Length: 135
Image (cartoon, rainbow, N blue to C red; front, top):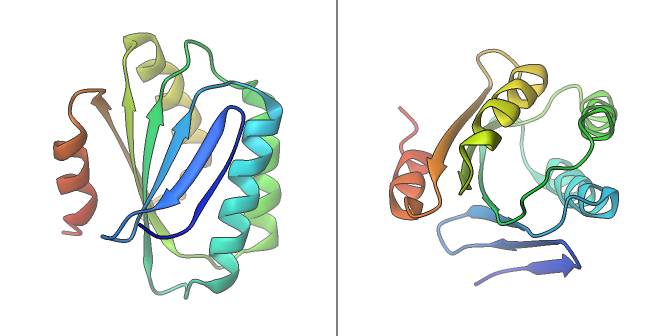
């Protein structure tokens, strides 16, 4: 089903429908680094006129340090001041993550260019349908 990368705590693969699926099983900084490396490679080869679709599956009870995530994401945004729009669906089991990730996405999303929506872990199909609906 396309390219796969992974390490302990994070795995990425490109699905047939061009969605980039990320599975988080660890809140480690190393997981964040691999995620950022994957995104860096994507931004390098993706035309800024396109939209990237991300499906995050969060299987960990914790989240990486917020300041670290924000710092790494900002570095990537500075490296690519012009980058594709994004649509990100996040599947998670805990309602606690909803508020936390909402705060994170409001800090990182570029207004009018990035969209993030949250789904329960059993709503994978609904999340994929939302990702592919670009209207």
